[in-house]
Image (cartoon, rainbow, N blue to C red; front, top):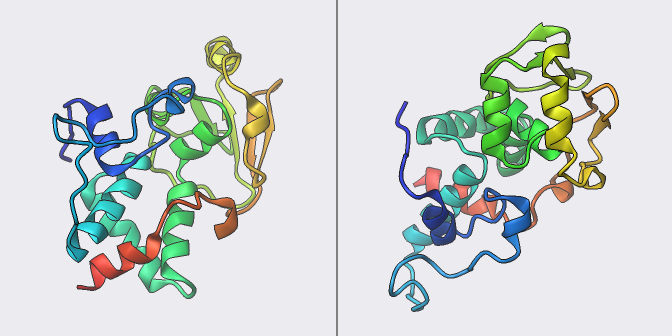
Length: 200
């Protein structure tokens, strides 16, 4: 799988990604694109608008182009609103649920926690960040990893945990209660533009 190793903050600024840098730095992050002429307004083509929105969502969840296209195909096959289903699949990823529940300061850190084998799903070790959780799944932390996770969580405001998960910070458990509704997801995402991008 292709892996980008360049300066990620520049990419995030270019596509308007908000929440991939440290949460403490998000509000102070410059909103214009990177580079000498980043602040210059340019009229984008229709294709560029669609592409930018696709890249924005893809980079927010740290998924590759191939993964994102796979998720879109899966969403398109299911009954319902394709754009909403796509976002629900992305939100149900194990690394994202850990991040949203306060088990990681960033999605990158949450992904590393999973990769290093610190996490159990329904009592079984899962080291795949893209693992899709289902309603009722219980995510827990290995006993030997608990001190590390507690130190991470001490720096995060757990009151911002989403309504569709139940977080027990004492036992370091997350219960994935249900798939989130569209109104509970990022209102800045324009998933219809992604549908139009793949429909061409």
